[in-house]
Length: 287
Image 1 (cartoon, rainbow, N blue to C red):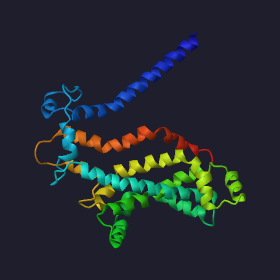
Image 2 (image 1 turned 90 degrees about the horizontal axis):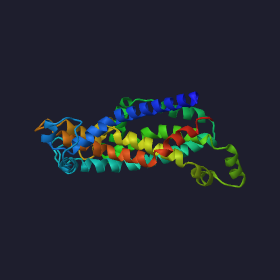
Image 3 (image 1 turned 30 degrees about the vertical axis):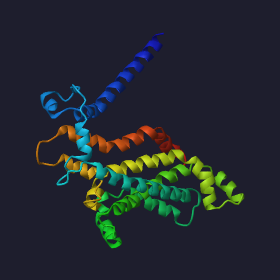
Image 4 (image 1 turned 180 degrees about the horizontal axis):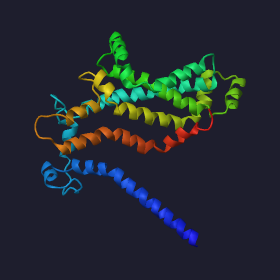
């Protein structure tokens, strides 16, 4: 009984610690949410942690279609859709290419495949700043400078190294016997990929979707360097909105804008987060 009571006390202390950590972690989100639905007078007169006396969504409306991001006062809406048009194709294309690459490197070894894999791994650790000048030159030669398509191309190229690494480490856990049996039955490269590999790949696809979407959606450096005036993503617009120095600083609008910019990634984690750890750990034992 004494050991059992000690175990209960230990679990209680662990739960209390986890609850305190969660509250500490969620406190900034609480401040952002409550500030975004307050009026400026209420923000000035009250405390950051005070709950709003009345829910006011005017700041959200202004952040979406009326706030000034520099000299333009169109809100985040056009930049939000720029990010959607850039991020969704970039995520899908880089993930699909990474899947095929990982499949090849795991089950269709060729002379020099390990060198190729090592080179791709090195690509994962190249800082963003290193590729800015050569990528700007390439986009200029291709006529894609300051366009959404050019920004999408940058993220596809930079993301292929990560997606290939993820897929290769996942696919090495798929038994070689399955692939060999399909070959004996006469299945070719793409038939094996479609009928054997893809049905097993949902967890790792979700990992890559979440990873790539988060990296691309939250990126600021590539957006500010390669995105033109009409192709800037939402992160650049949010920075311009918050740092606009004309007029009164509207903290409620800034908070609403920050939450709007973060909603897509937050929603993706909530919908598909259960696959994330499963996909990351699936290839941890073999390969």
